Amino acid sequence: MVVMSAPSRLVIATRESRLALWQAEHVRAVLGQRFGLAVELLGMTTRGDQILDRTLSKVGGKGLFVKELETALEEGRAQLAVHSLKDVPMELPAGFVLAAVWEREDPRDAFVSNRCATLHELPRGARVGTSSLRRQAQLLALRPDLDIQPLRGNLDTRLRKLDEGGYDAIVLAAAGLVRLGLAERIRSRFDVQQMIPAAGQGALGLEVREQAAEWRALLAQTSHRPTELAALAERAVSRALGGSCTMPLAAHARWVDGRLHLAAALGHATEATRPLLRTAADAAVADAAAAQALGESAAARLQAAGAGDYLAAAAAAATAAG
Image 1 (tube, rainbow, N blue to C red):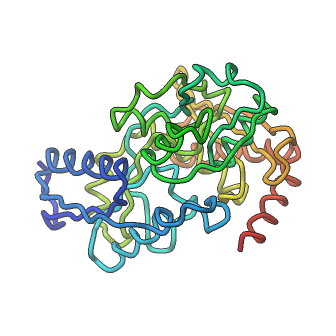
Image 2 (cartoon, rainbow, N blue to C red):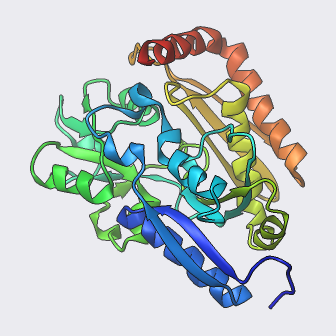
Image 3 (tube, rainbow, N blue to C red):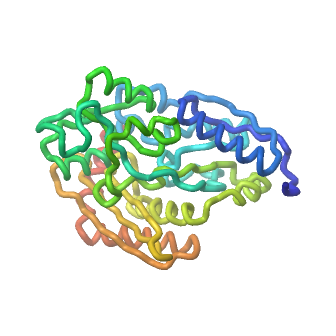
């Protein structure tokens, strides 16, 4: 138990999907046990949950999953928002900060199919469901013959669409399946070098108002430093490249013998057959500044590899999406 000046009651704003509620319940249990807080949940439906007939890149990006939660924080209806970190925009609105990043679950992408055990067992022209431009670019780099089809909705909805026969396979984050007790649906997991995850994938981000100093100090005690530094490096790649949901960008950092190894890849936003640009960098990272520098170094290497043309295509796609 710690002594704090913040109130003993905390309200968590959360999306109402089964996975989001699991994450919020997990945070509630940990905070209640560790700090003796009385924690309540404020369930909300975001625009990202409501718009299912278009890809995120065409309707405003991942920020659609967090805007309503931030409004609840701003209005004082909640003090904390819990997010899948990969859904958090690289630049938070003024007045908001990430107070903590929690330890990462399995960061890999999962291959889910009722027909085949691996991607390479799929027949030519198989329909694979994903609305992630990052996954699309990397899937086509592995199997140019695949028919990639959009797939929106929460995790249960995506599995139902697969089971109804709409797809030969779908690709999901392994972390969500594991957290909901659905690991048996995973036929195989992609190696992180084969299919580089999204920045922050598998980690939870705890967002508060910047001015909420007491809550920031309290929640900072729960942050998992290795995951936090890795996520900082990953998110720095996107930030340095002006990342948006129209950019097929992957970035994943992992600790090896005390050094942080960062891999990144950039695909073309409108020409899926263009080759992936890949890079890797590593450094001894002890603080946020070093993590940020590692991410910026990887971004610079992508720029040197010809990312300018790819970034221009992503910007044009963002403009076209409105």
